[in-house]
Length: 77
Image (cartoon, helix red, strand yellow):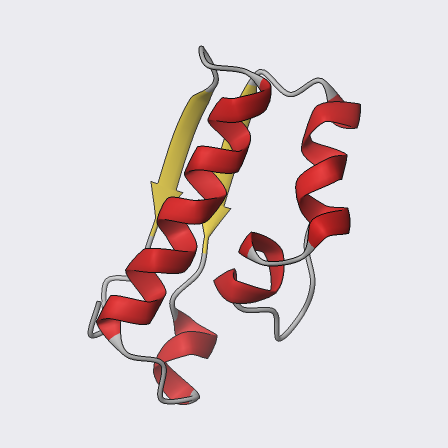
């Protein structure tokens, strides 16, 4: 799932996004956020909370899922 302009909180706190993780039968999750959060004033703490919620949601569907977390190298996070 992807969305231009999307932020981690949009996927971590969206019941439809979280429900889709189970429907997709994922073996791997690629989480790539940080740029939009930085430019929209999201705190590091709030960003971390959203990323952790996404990881927990993915692991609740598949505890063995591989997760790759990608952050741009110029972000403040």
